[in-house]
Image 1 (tube, rainbow, N blue to C red):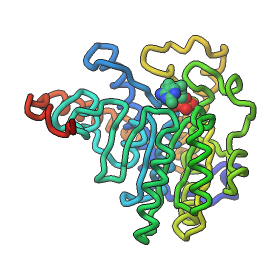
Image 2: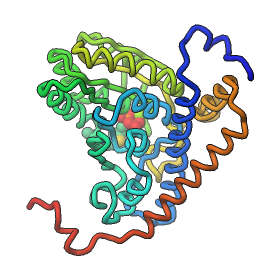
Image 3: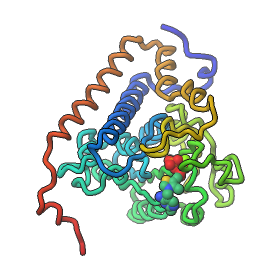
Image 4: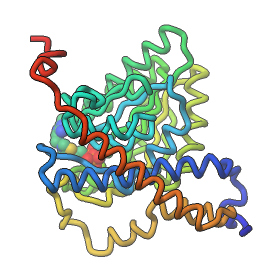
Length: 329
Ligand SMILES: Cc1ncc(C[n+]2csc(CCOP(=O)(O)OP(=O)(O)O)c2C)c(N)n1
Ligand SMILES: [Mg+2]
């Protein structure tokens, strides 16, 4: 068995089995997104999709720090978050394919995956629009005296939207149990953060609203888990929200039609060196996990994803009658 590295030495590590669970979910998300990319490229699905390859550690670490009864809201780049919260792979694929047994009856699609049974309250396509909604979800928990937290994921671009500022302010005044997690992937669509935002550390915006603000390595799943665990406990105790800025990188373009040619040369390669899955595998090897076990897990995750896709593709499309259900006008 090899020893943990010096950088790990002063920090309590999560049990290896737990870290293997995280790896498994991160691999499922990676393969899920790769398959989504293929489905859209092959014209099996209309519209667009926003993939999260490279950002898996943020959602897996954060969702791993809360339980099913806790709530989660995310963006249109939300497949990974919803899977990390526990939604089944086949019904997520089915939703994207517009099938009747999709998570939302096939009526939401890629940008609106929702699974209330696991606390995945919604994926939102209006940038920043869901932050005030997260407050309402958290207010309901607080009002009914349930010690739940609401995880709210959003991109760096959201921090320039008015609703971000209003939401942080009110969450702090009312001490709402919201964990605001900014997935800072350095770009809002095709714009580097620095061209739209006059500060570098987005977490400093927390200070204006009287809540703690931290910047963490979003590609270190255990670090994300540890930070969210700590602040979730604080929120459950009634001490209010936190803003966590998780630094990460979107390995693909903004949406499926974006080849991301605007990236400076070498940037992608540098971030691929810090791929969150590779980092976790290397750490597990240092902790003594056999390489063969990691390879087996990788191929199991790939098969699970491919099986789920095959099942979802075999399911029925909504009937004409089902199309009229859930329509309010
Ligand atoms: C209110 C609003 N303005 C503009 C858009 C168009 N839009 C879609 S995604 C996006 C970029 C958001 O970037 P960021 O918040 O960093 O999230 P990321 O896509 O990087 O995950 C924009 C401007 C939108 N959906 N909603
Ligand atoms: Mg972004």
